Length: 219
Ligand SMILES: [Zn+2]
Image 1 (tube, rainbow, N blue to C red):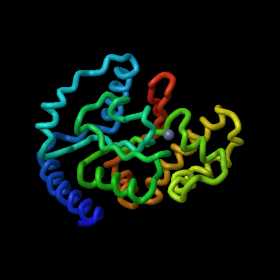
Image 2 (spheres, rainbow, N blue to C red):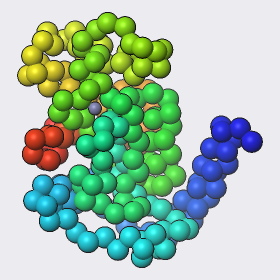
Image 3 (cartoon, rainbow, N blue to C red):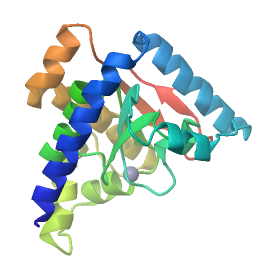
Image 4 (cartoon, helix red, strand yellow):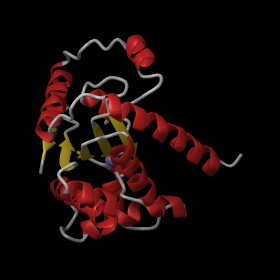
């Protein structure tokens, strides 16, 4: 069986389960409440006082369903795992990651799935300090492979907005890139745009500091 076919079957099964789950779930929390919960979790993470998650109980409760309130599109950087930096447990976040948090079709489709089938009402686009993908894109030159080029290509245009010679300017470029990706979600996905227009979805732009562990809401 091809990987694509397996993926489609997997998503199909999840969609059936998701419809069942949505019918049973409690009223949807507002975007402000979802963000307040994420910010509170990040505060616990920063202070080193994370909640004790009963992973075993959560795993059992979630075996047949999931209803993550928020989806996160973020960088693959090993130092920025969304579940940890927001101190969330199993089933809380639908996470889409790639180096440089790209808005490619796979990422868009995954986010559409979270919103349309799992009931996620918030998408957090999260970039981070000293992002290697942004730094490499702004350094120019040729990558070692076409695949690496594909990671850097969507970021290069952001580099041109500021002379990226200092770390301060790299940081500005990271901020530009977060905003650009968030805008692209709505420009490239009719489904996400309609969900925002209908008040069912809020897109939040956020920045993670490697120095402090804090996630700052930008927009
Ligand atoms: Zn990164």
